[in-house]
Image (cartoon, rainbow, N blue to C red):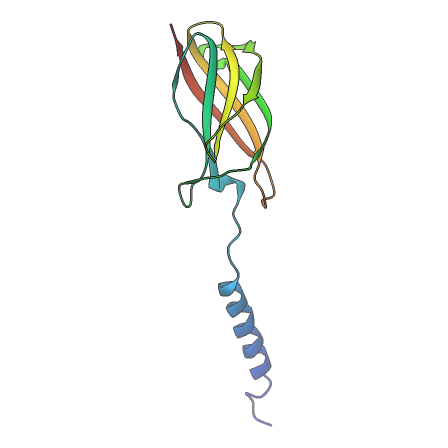
Length: 134
């Protein structure tokens, strides 16, 4: 028996494991996605805020995400308890999500979002700041 005969099965196994690792597609992580404001300025009063959910690896929009948590408040101006009601609005662009709200005063508003992306585990979260102007 050769001293290398016992090593061949281990080498073959190692080669198979490396081969499988190289051929298996990499799975995305929730950090591979981000929300982006379509417009960073809105008028005081009734407003529609649009955000884009993007896959940072490809820069492509991500359609069909489930947005399950939204909040808008004036935390950027030191008033996190100054919030406004927010609800979804229709969108005709894939990967763009729109929300109706009332920006009651001029200043910085923070939009906080949480979403599930189809086929991914974990939650995509975003905190975006927009300016309300007269």
